Image 1 (cartoon, helix red, strand yellow):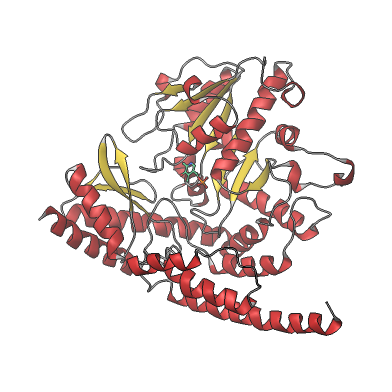
Image 2 (tube, rainbow, N blue to C red):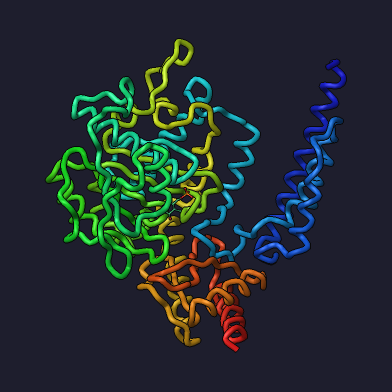
Length: 462
Ligand SMILES: *Cc1c(COP(=O)(O)O)cnc(C)c1O
């Protein structure tokens, strides 16, 4: 490139970024008014993306315009106030803004020498997360893509630590011929743990399953005998009911027998951030490792999974990767704590979100969403529908009659576009799930959604 063309590119880039910010601002402004699920026509338009890999360049301004014209209408409005699907959180303003800046920084968070700021923010924010979740202050952790990766990371580290105690070095000798490790899970184990265990080579058929109660909580009285080569996986926040396993009792019994306790607390662990809901998380601090998500309840933008271990050495023993040119400095090295080496600096948005909320803001986000869930439950009951779970945090399960009718209602709600809720099967029957997980949801959003769902349900029931 000539000097002049570089200067031109730089001035074009400035205008491009201005345009991008304007388009994004306009999208964000409209996020509470737009249809929650795209209209059929907007989905059809996605076909416009299907072209062969173009041989000629396209002006970046046109690239951006095409993304907005064809892409924006086909988004799910998860950042508005009426998306209640899965446990997908919204995006806090500070998190979104920090994401833009982090994009401009384009840091590789793998090593401190690659990005001093990313390494520092991670270290700070991991301590804040431990405090918010009521976990031991000296835990070590890593920032990964999601709770599934966090579960995977913790389970691999746990396996390595248990086998090391048995005199077996997994890093050197692998899993073939290693002493067996038993994994115990509840019957309501999340699919994410199963995937993580599958990736790690444990095998789903080898799992030992424990009975659960009517809310999906593991029954401590049904726990089998454990030993020092067992990993017990417990859960903070059942994805359907929001219920918590009795952690204090489970951890005590597991530790008496020398087992490792891992917590899948993708969203539920964050209840610890509120004095009003903290009691649900009692005893979870006694575990050995934890997986959680900041992109769910805390409303950090994607992707933002977190793995934490009480024994930081165990995490580093499993995750460290060395080479002559990758030497560690004297301080914490991010990539010694995660499966990834190069990765984006996801600590930036997590830090910005928690800094903007503070302990008070985080607690109020948790409490507000839980009280919206109560409002949903009361509204459903008043309209004559069955609320199937004890609404303990932000999850509501509702049935509109037979499985067939409930499925019809879910489809009608999703097509209507006012709000979005997903389906599940609970105790052998279809149910609709309402997860209130966004900072942006207001009482008016709940009331409008209730009104719409009730009307659609009456129509479906005929
Ligand atoms: C959402 C969820 C997961 C998986 O989270 P991802 O971030 O999608 O990997 C795991 N466990 C529980 C209990 C969840 O709710």
